[in-house]
Image (cartoon, each protein chain N blue to C red):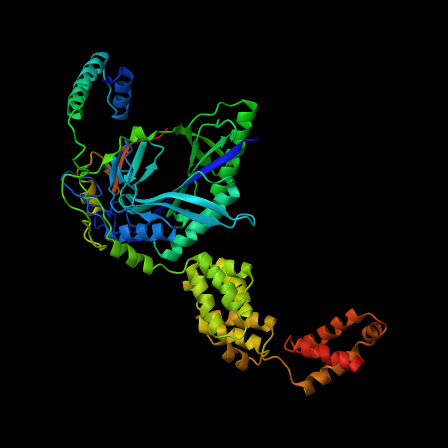
Amino acid sequence: MPEITEAEVRHVASLAKLALSEEELARVGRELNRILDYFAELQQLNTSEVPITSHALPLVNVYREDAVGESLSPDEATQNAPDGVDGYFRVPRIVE
Amino acid sequence: MPLQPTIGLEVHAELSTKSKMFCSCANEFGAPPDSHTCPVCLGLPGSLPVPNRQAVESVIRTGLALGCHVAERCRFARKNYFYPDLAKNFQISQYDEPLTHDGHIDLEGEGQPVRIRIRRAHLEEDTGKNIHLSDGHTLVEYNRCGVPLMEVVTEPDFRTAEHVREYLYTLRSILQYLGVSSADMEKGQMRCEPTINWIDPDTGERTPKVEIKNLNSIKSVYEAVKYELARQKRAAAMGEEELVQETRRWDEAKLVTATMRLKETADDYMYFPEPDLAPLAPEPEWIEEIRASLPELPRARAQRLVVDYGLPAYDAGVLTETRDLADYFEAVAAAVPDAKLASNWVMGDVRAWLNQEGGDISTLPLAPTALSELVSLVAAGTINNTTAKDVFAKMIAEGKGAQEIVEAEGLAQISDTGELERLVERAIADNPKIVEDYRGGKRKAIGALVGAVMKATRGQANAGLVNKLLKKKLG
């Protein structure tokens, strides 16, 4: 059974922008491994006769026609944002 | 064996639909910030996306035009990343199941046709825009966020920057012919990211892949590919600079590429199937309907112009650059006796006017029938080319017909033999020295005599006739 390594936990944490302490890294690692163990158990089921499911609903081709409807006003759009100016959302500068 | 360049392209094209990909906000450029947003494209909790059928059709249309297979069934995927150009922290895209796949575009090459394989053409949503301020803030606006975006990915089949350039011109013109995208790179409606490395065909050894961003014109792509190929080759040969897998940014001012960030791998985007959207399973009847409605594509049209109108291949290539220009030419040519003459006018004066005004053919205040009238007057010898150019300018400026202008201003060529004979005789009498030269064997001297007659008639004499009369009189 492949174990998730500490390096993998660090990588996933950095992708998720999570700052984990050493203690948390160890704990999360153990928890993720328990989840993997559970999936390993599921893997033992014989599913060769079961069609692959990629979606929970038995639906395909749900479309809308290409027509313009109502939009929010810039004020409405930005009203819940912590910071905004002139219809823009404003965030801390994201590039150097 | 020497190292071989390996170049693949990702091209993104904004689809020219009326509304966005997953909501009914307008797909419109240049509106006030955040005036075309709603809970769906802002990623507000509880909102649900619904795909735009027209956008799906546009990708199928493009796929078919590129010889791709249309998937019997495919799904959307979430591409997860942290960057505020999308409010919901992921982009709805396609990953393991693209809508269309495995086609090709054939290039002319340098007389040697080159086939570029298309890996896939899939559907996703465009991102919003960030404006980085010097005061420590970034402004974000989401009008563009959720606009339908098609991604066309090639196999790494390019060996030269020239082929990359030809591919982009070809793809752009195909997208414009299909009417799926305006595909103007300067306006960001078409964007291109090349991935470049060198490979040793003998050992299979290769330099790390480098992707280039910030390319805003086909010319920039061409320059950047040339630069990057040279940089990597130099680095591989000299070992002065370590090559790494990365994304580099094209610096338009300095004409160099510079490190932007280390390249992510697909794993880093944590793709997973989009649970909010039902899979697509385009019906075969729909696909055949779209296939049947494909227009004649630029290359086929150019070949037809050569056959139907007897045009040189060069003319046909220029005239078919855009569908509108080709339509215009065909409308003019249908009503004149000389298609090559019509081609000269459309390629020459019409295109010169468009370049000068910066517009497309729809802005030309001259209907095809108006130009046919002018071309027919030239073909019939009623006016000569020089006069015709003035008439062309007057037609545009004054909105009058060619015949009307020629009659009102008495511009018709003088082909009256009696009148021309008098003028020829006067030219001979006035220029004894030139006549002597001519009779002494300097046959070219006749040009000066023709010139004298043309001058006397303000350019309206039928030059061919003058020439003939002069030769007869001079014996």
